[in-house]
Image (cartoon, rainbow, N blue to C red; front, side):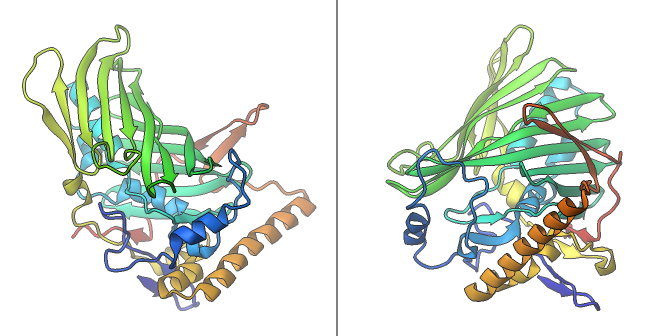
Length: 387
């Protein structure tokens, strides 16, 4: 969807990802001869190289910023997974709901293409019903993205602060997602801390991309933890372990396993009581999560900031959607050059850039942390239709 203001500002918003991995079922944004292009792209890159600052040509982008992808994992969802976390009176049921919600934040990646790397100060502000979400690129070196979401009606708050580090391993590229993710149930006084799985793109022998690795979820207030293991496709591309997730929920103090989890994050995940037996219960159904997802729309065009992702990258997104790769190259270079000019100007004036929505702290060893500067997020000029 493309919206233009009277000042000529363009806002480009595309459909969220479906369970099949395409952001638009009827459109494939990828450039032709993709495998050949990928192998050519990495022919001069040594195994073990850090790809954090690697510049991708627009042929390897789909029309979304990283900030939009992070945001969609929270505000584009077909069922009320987040609000369920606060409904149960039993702490074990709340924890299980949080585990199910964390699985729902995964989106099927598309092989061979990636979102745009956000520029410093880029923002993304979207609302879905009473949930208001704002994201901001709060650091350039290292590149750090932050998310703050609040739902005053449901007494829920989300804080993400993360950095993606990609490394080339010869036949694959693995992206590690570092940083914190917190879900706070304010009326319960509970904070759930969790990490993200890694993203593995494999070129040989069978091209594919999957979420892999271990995710830990813990809540100090109720003394429960979970371990989830995300499995990649098998080496020869067989379907057995494709998008699998296995794990357990256990007591922190005794390490006693309470429940076992098993399934696939693109289908269903079940939980089974280890102590009382019984049949497995479905806690996550991907069809419900991804059904009827709507493209965000502009509700207040004048309220859309110039730093909004859908504005910053609008010309590039439009060019990619049109298949005009020459215009796409020009548009991407224009955005990146504008950022370089702004950084040079700030450096020459000795001005330290300050984020709009977050405060950032850095440690001597190169670490970082962030926290939101406002308690609640106001309603956004971009909204997700409910029907």
